[in-house]
Amino acid sequence: MRHLVNSILLVMLMNTTGCLVAKTPSWIKKRPLSDEYYIGISRVSTSAPDFNQLAKNKALADIISEISVELSSTSVFHQLEENDILKDTYESWTKTKIEDELEGYELVDTYNKKGEYWVYYRLNIADYKRIKKEKLDKAKKLSISLLEKAHEERNLGEIGTALQLYRQSFDAITPHLKEDLSAFIHEYGRIDLANHNYQSIAEIFANLSFKAMEDPILFMPLSNGTAPTFTARYKDIPAKDVPLLIGAYGEPMDTFQGAKSDDNGVIQLPIVGAQLNSTTSIEVELDLLKVFGKKATDNIIGAMFSQKHDAPTDRINVKIVPQTANFKIIQGQSGEDQDLILNKAESVLTNYLFNKVSDPEDAAFTVEIGGRWLESTHDERYNLFRETLNYSIKITNLSAQSVIYQTTKSDLKGMKSGSQMKAREEALGQMESQLKNDIIPEINLIKID
Image 1: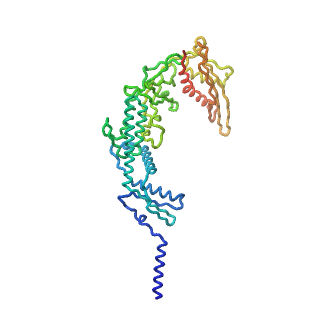
Image 2 (image 1 turned 90 degrees about the horizontal axis):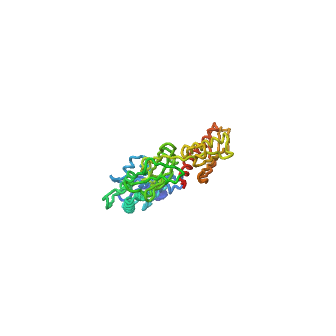
Image 3 (image 1 turned 45 degrees about the vertical axis):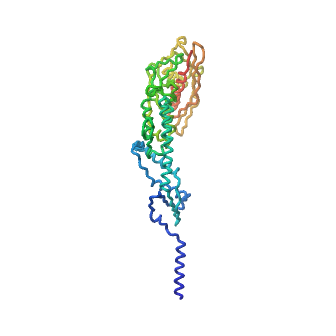
C-alpha cells in the first residue's frame, strides 16, 4: 500500500512541475506556414530598452518581408533600377511607408523564457490585399484627375502650372510604383500613369526654349531705353509662369538669380557678368527645385530629374554699350592701404559698367568711391590674419546734378594664415563678387529719363 501511495505522489509531483514550466510553443520550434496569413515572428532580449515594442516592430518587419509585389512590365520603376542610389532610396522609402501604414495585423501569442521575449503576429492576406487595392484605386483616381488638368494647362501655355500638376499627379502614385498603374485616358487610351507623367515632363523639357529677339542684345545702362528681355516658349507658344535661374555663364549656381515668365512668356534679363567691349553669355535654365519642390527622400520624380543636364537651358548673348564716368575718391579716404579697396572697386566698375574719362565735362556720370580697412588682427598661435573692410559708392547724373545710386557695404572679412595680404585679398574678392553679382545688376535696372 505504501508503495502505491508513493507512486501516486510521484506522479502528482511530476504533473505539478510540468505545469510550472511553460512548454515551448510550436510556432517557435517550427515557423508556421499559411496561405491565409502573412506571418511575423521575432525574438529580442528582455534586457533591451522597451523590448516589447522592439519585438513588435521586428515581427511587423518580418511580415513586410513576406509581402511580395509583382513588378509591372511597364512600371517606371525599371528606370529607377538603372540608378542604384535612386533605387535604394525608393526601396527604403517604400519600406518605411508600408511600416507606417500597415494595419489589420493581430497579436497571436507571446513567449517569455530565460531573458528572451518572443512575439507572433499575423496579417490576413485577403484583408491586406483589399485595403491595398482600395488605396491604389484612390491614388490612381487622384493621379488621373491631376494628369488631365495638367494636360489642359500645358495646352494653354500655362507651363509652370502644368509642371506642378504633373509632379502632384506622380506624387499621388509614388507609393505604388511597383504595382499596376494602368489607366484609361480618353485622349491617349490605356497608359501607365507613372510613365505617362514622367514622359509628359520630359516632353515639356525637350520643347522648352529661352530666346531673345536679337543676338546679341545691345544694352546701355543708366539710359531711358527699355530693359532687355527674352521669351520662354513651349514649342511655338509663350510659356507662362516658368520658374528660372539666371546668371553669368560659367559662374557658380549660388550666384544665379531667380525669375519667372509673365503671362506672355516674357522675362526681364538681369545683366550679370557682362564685361565692356565683349559679348557675354548669360545662362538661363529651368529652376528644378521650384518645379519639383524641396529635395526629400520621397520626392522620387524630383530625383529622377535632379541632374543639372536635365534642366532646359539656353544662353542669351549681351553686349554692353558703356556710359562715360569720371571717378573720384571720397575725401579723406586716400592712402596706400585704402588704395587697394578703391582700385579694386574702380577696376570692376570700368570692366562691367563705365568707360573712365579724366575730364568731368566729357563724362555723363561721376562715380565717388570710398573705402577703409576697419580691423587688422594677427593670432600668433596659428599665424592667422583677419582683415575687415567697408566701402561706399555714389553715382551722380551730371546732366541733372542728381544722385541716382548710393550704397555702403560693411564688414567684408578675410581670414588667411601666413600673410596679412592674403587675408586682404580674400576680403577684396568678396567685394568684387558683391559688385559683380549684386551692385552692378541693381545699377543696370536704373532708368534715366
